[in-house]
Structures are given as C-alpha cells and as structure tokens.
Image (tube, rainbow, N blue to C red; front, side):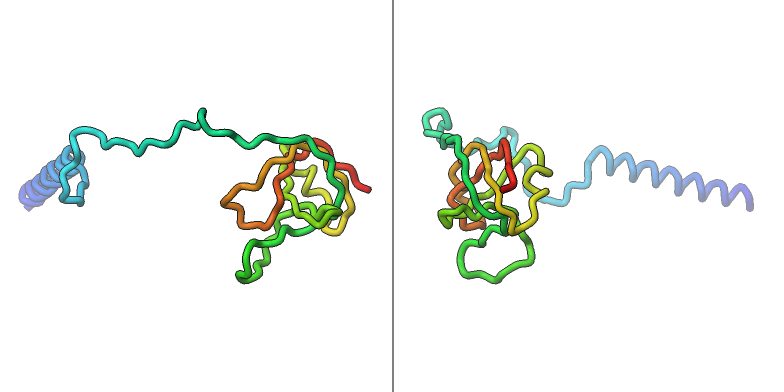
Length: 140
C-alpha cells in the first residue's frame, strides 16, 4: 500500500511539474488575437520645438489666501486648493518648491507673493488667471 501511495504522489508531482512548465513556457495568454511581429507606429506629435512655450513673468501680487473657485456651475466639493484672491479680484494658483511656504498661511490671511506668473493650465478645474511659482511670501 505504501508503494501504491508513493506511485500516486509521484504521478501527481510529475503532472504538476509538466503543467507548471507548460504555463511558464506558453504563458497565460487569454487573448486569442495574434501579436504583431513589428511594433505599431506611434502617432506623431507636433514638434514642440516649433511651438511657443508660455513665458513666466516675475510678479509681486497682494491679496488674501483662500480656496480657489471651481470652473463652471457644477456641484461644490469639500476640497480646498489654496490660492490667492488678488486685490484686483483675480484668483491665482500658488505653487512652491517648499509646500510649507504656501500651506502655512491660513485662509483669510493677507499676503504679498513674489514669484513667476505662468498662464493657467488649460485642463485646470479651477477658475484662475494664472499660477504663481512662489519664491517669497510675506504676511501683511
């Protein structure tokens, strides 16, 4: 009986090894479509060197820290992206290499920001006049 159990275990082991080798060699391909032998062509993008990139402009802007307004008339969310409501009524996103620089000011604080103004990203979900890369921030 011991010999019979050994034979069964040996057969099960061989079948498992053959199955594992087949899986590893053939892969677990479930897509019946054949793979192309050559890589497909990537869509050509326009040459970025020929396009005019937005230029940063040095600015000094005073205003009040607040949550940036969302674009459109969609539902209000609880998220708050910190920005600057400038004295002229325009909103600006704030970006800094040191996040504690902009995040340390509570909403409602009057500040003066020194930095480089860039146009807003076309995909921005906020209604802003631009984004200021903050170099220096001063509480008023």
